[in-house]
Image 1 (cartoon, rainbow, N blue to C red):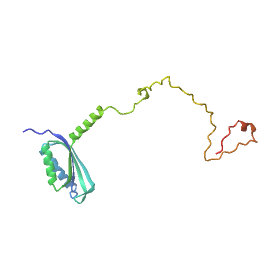
Image 2: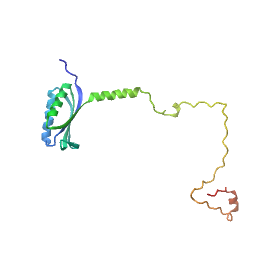
Image 3: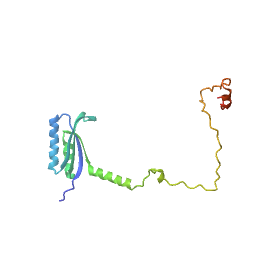
Image 4: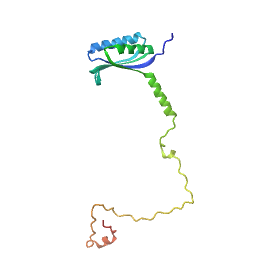
Length: 179
């Protein structure tokens, strides 16, 4: 009989709020011992602590969270999940196979790398040169426009220049249209 390959799993489970810290530690120790007896290698064992639940589970509003990151075969994981399902000390549990998620992420990365880039050119030097303009196209010079005086505000009235004070200045000043 061949042993199934050990894969990486992440397990998070919620312990009922009736268990105090010592009771929760006993529940965690029970599952830690079960994992090692089934041949699993525990990489990470982390108590997240007591937290308020986002929604009620079996009329409970709090639970103690715990996380295991471990390597095990599929039979060990199935047995662990069976025990958790039957236990009155565990509100919920979730086991995720991590290597499957990593493989999926690597597959996406390969696809993105193989796909041609759709980004704009980084610099104008790398942009293609514009097509030459044919000699048959006639170019018309732009008409010369006299520089405009200060732009008049649309809502403000334009004051009339004082002619009596400086007659030379008034003759040289451009005439502004009335609004």
